Image 1: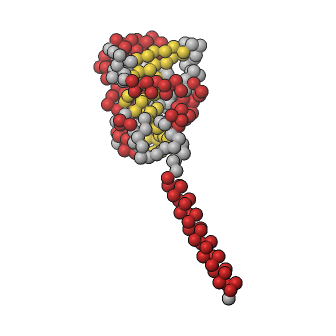
Image 2: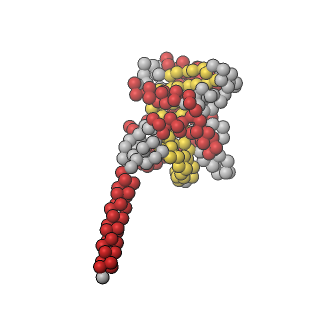
Image 3: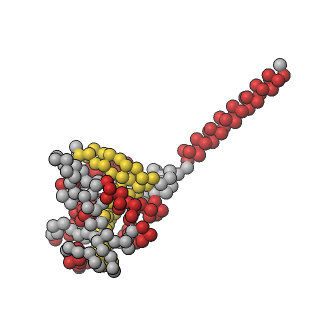
Length: 258
């Protein structure tokens, strides 16, 4: 009987330690910060299906409020361009500096064609922003808004239509689509950062410069920067240089009026 009793005691001790070990692992799992991640999500907004990606910062804590960026891709503004702007310009710095980034793809219209965010795709706002604010704690319930090319144009367009939701507008490049004094006035309380490549074509240079000067004359912190030797797709704001964009976001803490 003694060997059986000894085995019983050992089994009991083993079971007790397994319970304690499992409890410790569970406690660590529940209290450890969530690692940085990018997730693809879908949300129904006013009858429109919106596909979007969310970047969470390192050590993300859902109980904590974070600064946030609403980002748009360039070109057709589909999910490929969303991935491009996240990977080249926003994700690494956002994860490191503690920002949430939300980047929607252009929604499909009645005919199945994607509708750009400075055209009919803008119909998802402000409902989409309200939904994101319900899902995540965003500092002051306001976003920075940014994007390259068509994404920069979309950033100006959406910010002007929904100024109460934004702290700054950053376009690299980009300008106000169909500008008017009223639409420029709508963003005049935000910080505005405009970048264009020295070797870029089309009308980017004159239109961006004109709008930056108009805003600056109104007392807005509006900066127009020509990137030396750069084409339309600028490398000076990408990858290891992307921190410049976040330096601008941080600058808004000082205020956006001269």
